[in-house]
Image (cartoon, rainbow, N blue to C red):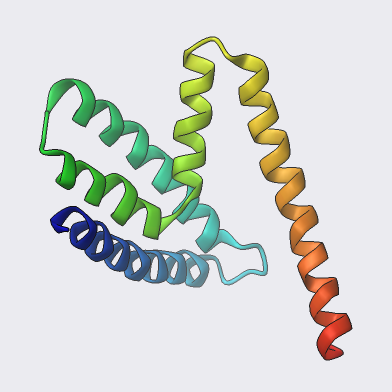
Length: 127
């Protein structure tokens, strides 16, 4: 139960951090390019790479705290960090085709499903 509460608290912290950092990044450039989201995603990838190896090799911490930080905080901050970590793990394990498939399916499939969801909403609600 403590593990779930810590992950939930971490998720709330990560979401609020995403809102703050993304807003800062977007205001800093004042353009139409989604700089704020890009900053959040890249920062999240950097952090999960650093903390993932730190917590698994050099600074062993209790599982619930590791999960609260990696899944809760960084999961709330950006799921791209998890995607990056898992794809890197596939590459690191020599599973190049699986890594390529993960990148291709996530990006092409994700964009395609955004389009499908958009079209469904249009049909249902005349959006």
